[in-house]
Amino acid sequence: MEKKPLDTLISKNGLWVSRNGYLHSIRGCETSQKYIRIEMDCGEVIIVRNSKSSRSARLLRNHKFKKACKKCRLSEDRINEFSKRITRKDDAEVRIIRSFRLDKEKPAIKSLSADQGTPEKKSEHVPVMKDTENTPPVHADKIAKKQKEQGQKIKQKKGPENSKTSGGTPQSQKKLKKVEFTPVQKTRILSLLGPSEMISFSKEKRSFAELESTLVTKRKKDIREMYENSRENLLGKLERHITEFFVDMGFLEVRSPILIPFEYMERMGVGEDKKLSEQIFRVGENMCLRPMLAPGLYNHLRKFDNLLPDPIRIFEIGPCYRMESEGNNHLEEFTMLNFCQMGSRCTRNELEFIIGEFLDFLGIEYEIIADSCMVYGDTIDVMHKNMELSSAVVGPIPMDMDWGINKPWIGAGFGLERLLKAKHDFKNIKRASRSESYYNGISINL
Image 1 (tube, rainbow, N blue to C red):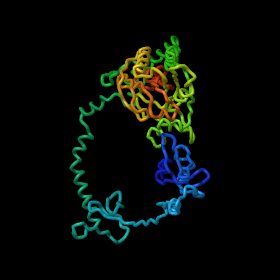
Image 2 (image 1 turned 180 degrees about the horizontal axis):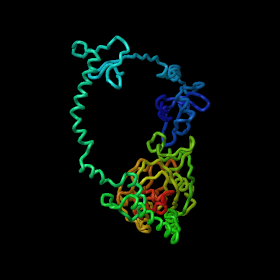
Image 3 (image 1 turned 60 degrees about the vertical axis):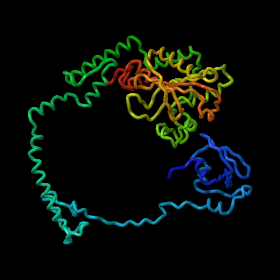
Image 4 (image 1 turned 30 degrees about the vertical axis):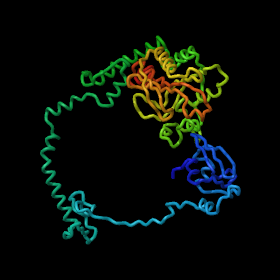
């Protein structure tokens, strides 16, 4: 049975079980994204987390309590109604009636001999079937014999046609020989292509072995040239350049933990009841690998408020993890850049100015379009062709209250692997990622 959240249990029962086991009646309650403020009839006021697995939720779900609060003045009928246990479905008696029905278009006896196709005689009794129109009874062995005769007629009709297709003409055999590359061979060839190389399998005249040998030789040469010239990994190099850019723009670099409490995701509106929570890598019951950098930036903004000069400008670059679907633009382990500014000059024009300066610095073409998402609401998406590079937000937004933020802010997040894919025109996102198969977009499975 699916566990219901605490606010649902409270609204259903109109009652509350305190930590010491006392049963209270509720005068009123207010629910935010994370907490519930409950006011009892006895005057007591508490604030608790809206959790499915809390001790109070278990007590309400199982209808358990020690005593009723005298000051709340609960009636005996209400107490008795809450005390009733829910009857379970598995306590009910289930009677199974075994029966069968013979279809008039199928043979009644299933056991047929493999050689003759006649029913095996297990007993003298022969099942009899009647149709729905009160026709005389039909024996099952006659039905089987009739169907066998019909099947043989169908095979005789289809025999010449099948012999033509199976034997094949010289022209059809020539058409089959035109397929030179299997799907596995095509995948291998595509992985060996360089970033700027293209291939047409329909026009390719070389055999798979010749083509593979040529591409392997080219990739070996590319790897040696990279070692002699730069020796820098493109993902690490991009991260260093981005750090220099934002430091020069007046942003403070921060580093937040990769392992975070799952409670942070509930504050972001991605609780266990949300579909997005299925993409989160859980570690134990209460922790997870961060799927985004926003929780860490929220915490830093709150703690730096009134400590740093206005406006507060921070950024972070680091790994994130999601159970993403497969595709040319998705990874389960990826690197994010998030920057944000809080306080004055937090306008859309300021946000677009920073984004423009940043992408001009990297030499990447882009366009900005309006969009929306479940976490932030209205967003500004930064696109390169058909690929989303960033999702940007102009705050404040409702969830700021759960993080202790009460000032205007702007921010955006970029995937570094997507920036590399756009900058170097990689054919898939894996060429730009942390990988044991590619180095700087070049295959090393040689």
